[in-house]
Length: 253
View (cartoon, rainbow, N blue to C red):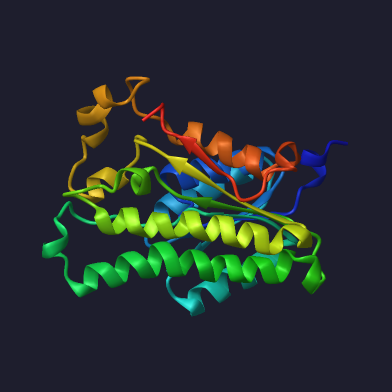
């Protein structure tokens, strides 16, 4: 019987109901993981993702919660504990805001951006380490953070705060990766470029990918599934010697 058939443990995918998160959740289920699908508000989409995972023969549960809320994060990990041993965390949940210049930002925008994108990832990573680390009696695991190419570009005139939040994720990936590598945990990140997801609409530019397609060397936007393939590889034993890496998936941009 294959490892996929017997089960690989539990994977938590934050922001797992749509876009890149959904693609990661479905892909990890194909690889043999039972999946906790975290979502912020779209229960219908989360339930559809769970149903698709169940159809693949794996267990799944949808857990509503804001990763920026410590209480919600604790509840999500408690739900994961009921499914089995935590083996993978995909820190995918994140937000973007309307395109604006920095002088037009208000405090609420900055607090929301940093709380969800940065603090949320740290809270989830903290709980994952407590369960995965051999220092705490765990059996190891993989943490994959979703970064962005935004820190390499700065996103001037649009999303400098988002770029800064993802720059923090890059630093976290390197630091945490080195901190827990000897404890059986591999921490890495995927840095997507322009991907065809709904996040661009939430930033007020729904056709952003098509607008910028000519600036991408490969001349097209990427798909959520293309990003998920890289996440799946980083979660697998095929990436057993990869720690603190940030894998750019941007079509050359």
